[in-house]
Image (tube, rainbow, N blue to C red; front, side, top):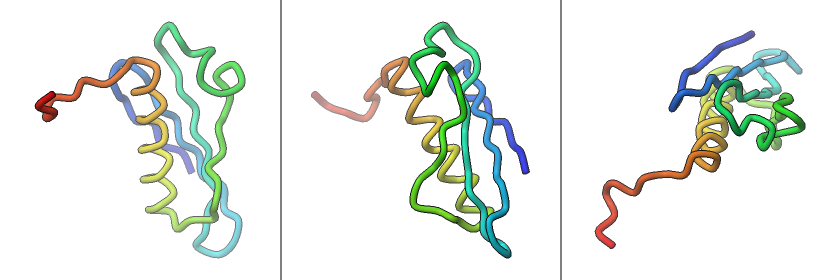
Length: 83
């Protein structure tokens, strides 16, 4: 199973592979941008640990992990921080 999510000018490619009935292992890959070589082994697929997950959780966790990786590359803006 495959899904692509656009986030801050990057593409997060999520792939699930079934490991048991209704359980999946997940990997994600970041594509786009100028700093791609920083994330993973030259933009390779990054596996999620502590699985397997249900399909819904696998997609959610992979998307959030991909977004966190992009945020690390670009930096985040703390809009709701008063300091």
